[in-house]
Image (cartoon, rainbow, N blue to C red; front, side, top):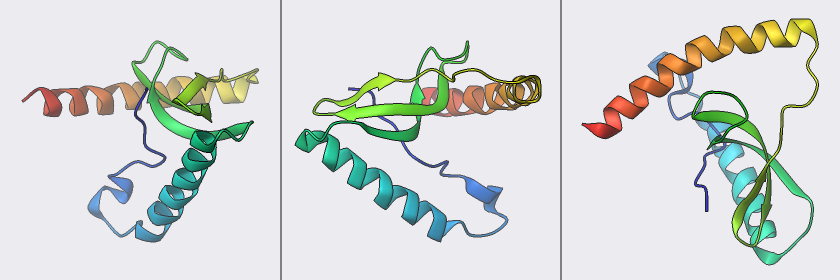
Length: 107
């Protein structure tokens, strides 16, 4: 089972509180997980997971949840030029964040 989280734990980089949005995201994701584990069909939520959607080892994607947890990581789908440019920009920043997290875990 792929473990994942529906929100970034360092929201606002310590410059404020994202507690309410994090709590809502956690509650929504927990409900979706429980419905998936119950066997409900078609449970799709966004989650930051280990994946091959991009060349990065982790990425936020839509996932299909089921009895075994994350059962499928869905592709991004068609992107227009503006979206592709934004994705490339975001991947550069995300790659740095991933490396920082991996280095922290490996200490």
